[in-house]
Structure formats: structure tokens, C-alpha cells
Length: 299
Image 1 (cartoon, rainbow, N blue to C red):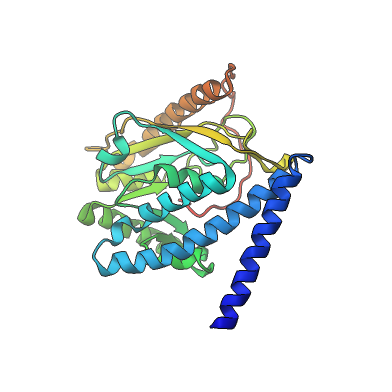
Image 2: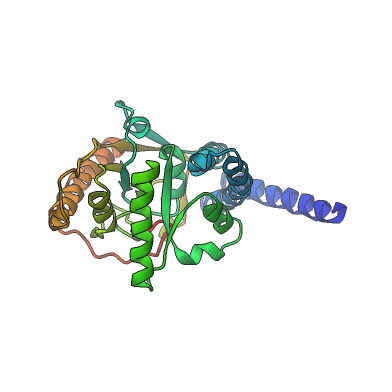
């Protein structure tokens, strides 16, 4: 045990020294800031996932498992604020995040940094959905499993339907909300846009009879844009929109519900980005077909 602690201490000290050296180098070479913040973000994620494993076990033992993901999300939010200088600023004057339960929360999906966005907005008594492969990821997969993540195997349609039925049952019986990204993949968009929406979140809301709460994040390519190795500190605005009721809707209404919600979110995305940048932005002519990578929160 002593040897293990010695190696761990050396690793952490070396990692910290390497990260600080890149932060110092960024004063002269701006691209070094990309490496520095990437290193800081990854170690923060690992540390919070480890904390999440312990917190999930403890909260389960005392009957509070439903708030495990909220507790770890908050820890990641504050950790990243100090290690990377990035903060998502949430506009929720009606306290919709704190007062609407249960619900299906949905949001636009840009990059891996959206994990930090979840840290800022994640409500109590809420779970994420995730692709089944993440169960096998050390630290993160352990935490997600212990904290009640709803895993979906998209290669197994019967298993995916079963998982969604389980999610609907959890929403109804435990009043547990769910957060999903209807785009299904990260867009990595330089300008504000939305990929076509998948309908899983909307079917789930209609099946459960709970409202959909759209959450819109301004385009933040000026903060993180991987293609140009841009990773800066800064504040990113987030807007929580009014809940959209689904009571009395049927599966036949899902297409229209999906379309109207996407249009509402796209309009708010343009407006929010205009405010963040201080300049007008034209509404995209098409819905785009950009390719993205699978995320931890798919549907």
C-alpha cells in the first residue's frame, strides 16, 4: 500500500507539473493552452468519477441514490471552474430545474465540454442515459453504473426498447427525471446549429406523461474548438426554457412535438449566441447533416 501511494503521489505531482508548464507556455504559445486545459479537464473528470463511485455507494446505503448524479455533477462543475477557468452560467429565473419533477430534460450537444455543462445544470433526482459500452470504462463506467444510469445498447433494438420502458417506469414510480441529448451525437459546430433530432426523448416523455424541458447552450466554439486546437477560459450562457406539457399526447403526436421543440431550441440558440458574441447571426438555412461522435448520453 505504501508503494502504491508513493507511485500515485509521484504521478499526481508529475501530472500537475506538466499541466502547469503548459499553462505557463500558453502565455507565449497560445496553442499550449489547449493542452493545459485538456490535461486539467481529464484529471478533473477522473477525480470526480472516483468521488462519484464512493458517493454513489454511500448515498445508496442511506437511501439517497437518486441524487448521486446531481452530487457528482456539482463537484465536477466547481472543480473545472478552478482547473480550467470555464463556467456555464445558467439563466433559470423561474427555478424550473429545481421545481419541475419528474421531466425529460433535453439539450443541444456540441462537444465533450457538455459534461461540464451538465455539472452546472443537472437537477436533483435525475439520471442520464448512456450507450452500453460505457459500462466498461474504468472509473466513469463504475460511477455511472452505481449511480443509476440508464444504459442503452443501440445495436440491440429489443434491449434498447426494454431500457426505455424501464426508464418510463422509473419516471412514473420514483419521480426520477431523465436528461437526454436528442441530437444523439456531438455536432462540433463552429456556428450555432442543431443536428436532426432523434425521437427517443419525445416518445419517453409522451409515454410517461411528463413535460419536456429544453435547455439551450450558446455556441461556444470561441471557448473550445478542437479542429483549431482552441481551448480558452470563459463563461458560457445557458437558458432553461419553459416546460412543454405532454399530457394527453399520443405517439401520433411525437413527430410534430419533435419538430416544434427543435425549432424553438434553434431560435433560442441563435438568440443566445448573438448575446454571447454581441453580434447578429443568420438563421441556418438547413438543419445540417454534420457527422458527430457517439456520446455518453445518446438516445
